Image (cartoon, rainbow, N blue to C red; front, side, top):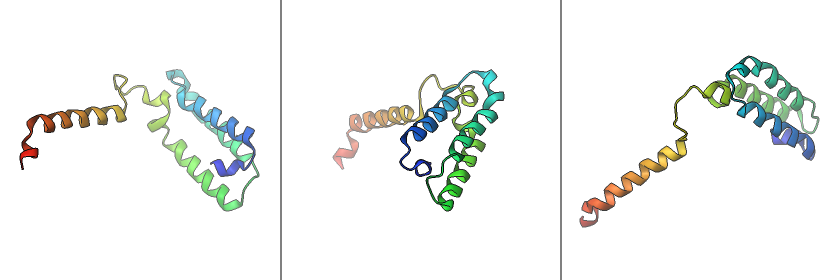
Length: 112
């Protein structure tokens, strides 16, 4: 997406800010507003003229696919999954820490 905006840093910043507002909005009632908000984001990107047609085509295909996967990344859709405020990276780190503790305390591997 960055290539769409070329050297227009203000337009890029506006796009990124709008994306994060859409991504982080978490109230249940905002689910109905997602389509309109995402259409506004797409329109903002379409207003740029900084790159070739192939780059634009690929960027808008990616953006459309992102919109279709909204339930995987937009907070207003993901809030319903219980995570106890633990994210995937933290879960992986906790598992690795537990395994490291078990392996180092058993000392069996070191004796081989």
